[in-house]
Length: 184
Ligand code: IMP
Ligand code: MG
Image (cartoon, rainbow, N blue to C red; front, side, top):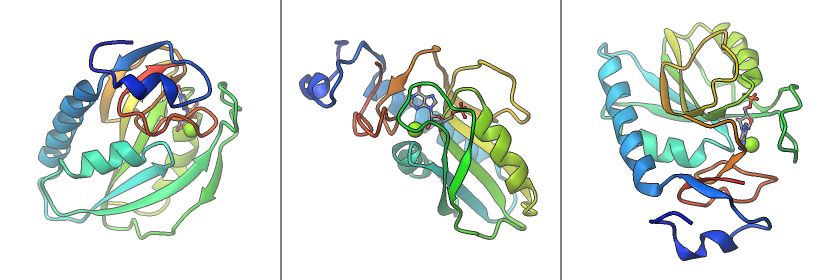
C-alpha cells in the first residue's frame, strides 16, 4: 500500500485493493482548488444550487461545498446504472428526484466519476428542461473514455480506466468510506 494509507485500509472490504490512486492529501488539495474555481466562476448574485448525484458524490460534495465561499443550497438526485457489477449496464434510471426548483438558479451537478458518460448524457437533457440560469458539471474523476454531450467544467483528476473505490465510490456498496481512492 502507498505511503499515507491507513493501516486499516486493506481490511475494509471483501476484496483486496490493488493500489492507492489518489491519497487523502491529494484529494484534499484538489478539492480545495475546485472549490476556489467554482467560487470564482459565479460572480453574479444569483442563487447557486449544488446538486449531488447519490450515492457516489456524498463525500466529495461534503468536502467541496465547504470550499465554496458564497451562498449556496445543496440537494441530491439518485441515478443508477451499475447494479452490483463493475461494468456499466448503460441503462440509467432516476430513482429519486426531489423536484427542486432549478429555474433561475445556477446549478452545479456533482458526480463522483464519469465512466461511459451514459449517466451524464441522460441526466443533462432532463435537467436542462428545468430552466436553470446555468448548468455545469463538476466531476471528481473523469476516465475520458468518450466525449460527453456536455463536458464537465471542473474535473478533479483524469482517472485511469480501472475500477476505482473509496471517497464515496463503491463496489457493490463496499469501500465508500475509504478516505482515499484505490483501484480494485
Ligand atoms: P457512467 O454512466 O458509465 O459514466 O458511470 C457513472 C456512474 O457509474 C458513476 O456515478 C459511478 O457511480 C459508477 N462508476 C463508474 N465507474 C466507476 C468506478 O470506477 N468505480 C465506482 N463506480 C463507478
Ligand atoms: Mg456507484
